[in-house]
Image (tube, rainbow, N blue to C red; front, side):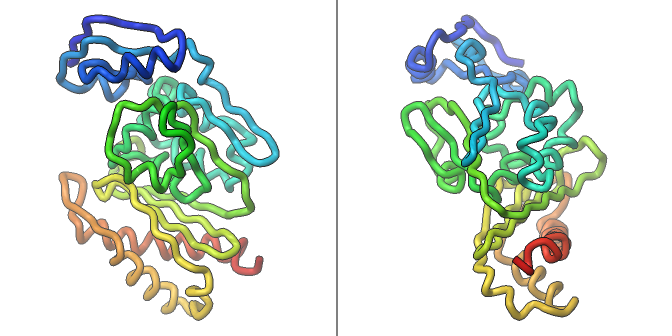
Amino acid sequence: MIRVKNYVRAASLEEAYQLNQKRTNVVLGGMLWLKMGKRSVQTVIDLSGLGLDQIEEDEEKFTIGAMCSLRELEVNHSLNSCYDGVIKESLQHIVGVQFRNCATIGGSIFGRFGFSDILTCLLTLDTYVELYQGGLVSLHDFIKLPRDNDILVRIIIRKDRRSAVYQSFRRTRTDFPILASAASFTEDKLYLSFGARPMKAEVLEINRSDLADINTEEDFKNFARDTAKKFKYGSNMRGSAEYREHLAAVSIYRALKALEEVSYGN
């Protein structure tokens, strides 16, 4: 458990940022993973009064406040209709509805957890994070940055015509994933992302022209096996590195077959 001395409901992002510069302070988020740690916290910083709990849409993008719950993303019709329901698919197996009603998208992305389904998913979309001091940063770049005390304000997903698919392998429906995977097609790229390796998610970009000679079932399987080897895997209580690599190859094969019908002819 954690021990907390002070609680502050921030009146502004500037106040939250300044408070967060002290190493013994921490942003509260949904407090679902935070409460499971063992540490002493001087001050927890609550962002719930800053209006960051909205999902907004315009012709070019979705803008998602950091305090939106995972459940709000899961049930948002407009958000899910744009990407073949891939966001809902990546969220619906996370523990349970009660948990997803509390867990925030900001905490899920800023934490860069190795087991994160939603991080794995969003890496294959045109996704950006808005940081209070760091400004707008692509999610691909954000996951490579060292951890700091900035404040994640919003998630931005730009609209395009890509098709996407999400898969996860679990021992039971609501368990942590043994391997999480996502794939998407744009006009010229294939994006593959794997999380729960058990390291944090990593994304690979492949030129669509490199897929031109993949025609037969054997071609698909060989490509899947060869591509799976480009990722690194580790072992833990849920599975070995070798098993995860095998699952990755299966996942790539299934993703290509699922995307083939809607994407190859575009």
